[in-house]
Length: 113
Figure 1 (cartoon, rainbow, N blue to C red):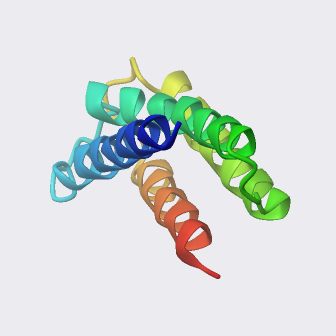
Figure 2 (cartoon, one colour; figure 1 turned 135 degrees about the vertical axis):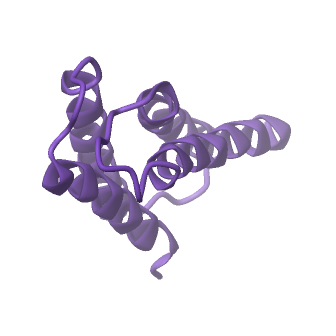
Figure 3 (tube, helix red, strand yellow; figure 1 turned 180 degrees about the vertical axis):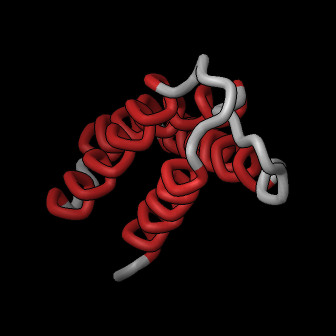
């Protein structure tokens, strides 16, 4: 079970890397788009986050429900924003920056103790 926890955590971190990296690649571009890395990174963050909570509860580890709720809420908002704007050619800079800032806020909630 601990191996499963490590695998799901690895997938969670890869999802973050894809989402944030996909955004940073376009930081200086004038026309910003929601690329595949951002979309699938956001979706994998939500799915693997649910998996992490499930595996931790299966191992009888304590889960901070308030932190999970905040992270899940932010993750769903980011995933929905990416999904809705995935086909647009030229996402507004404010929306694009909001996605990146929400992603960083999600990480801040994860590492805050």
